[in-house]
Amino acid sequence: MRFILTDISTSDTLTVQGRIGNIETFTITIRRKEDRKIVKSFSSEVIFYDDAYDFLYPRLIENSDGYLKSIKVDIYDDCCTDNTTAGFLKVFEGEIRGDAIDWCETECAITCNIIEKNTETTAYDILDSELILDPSEATQFESIHAIPRMYYCNEIRPSWLQYFLFISKILLGG
Image (cartoon, rainbow, N blue to C red; front, top):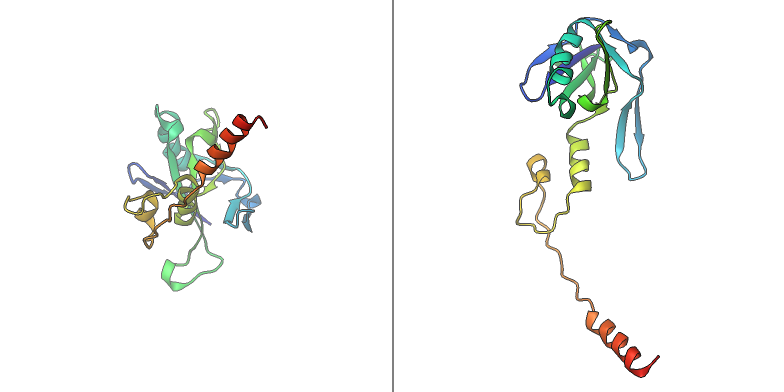
């Protein structure tokens, strides 16, 4: 099992060589949510010590805006090896968010949950949060995936009919 941590803002990368707690109890679950999204979840908290603590502490705890930052995490496993990845297969892409960690300075340990974050989840999040009204405007989603142009029809709503019925009801005393 190999964990690679990457600071997104500076592109600093660390291949974790030190101790990682709770690694023997974690499982990766793939499931489908109610809104038909496929979600991978990491089932337990991970405790980083040694070099990972030295990497995460100044970026997420000492930094004044560390609460708003996140660190990218790639998890590789050697269970399903092939020749293209030098014996390791990427099984999970996620992030450690600065607002979701606990730390202990006396033990030099950071406890965190790793949240799935990849291009698929980013695209779903953008589609859930962004309304595409004008096809001529560039959206965040287009920076990830090229989408075909889609034109929307303006529906004619009979609001004048509603006003007519409302006013006639008032005038006729109904």
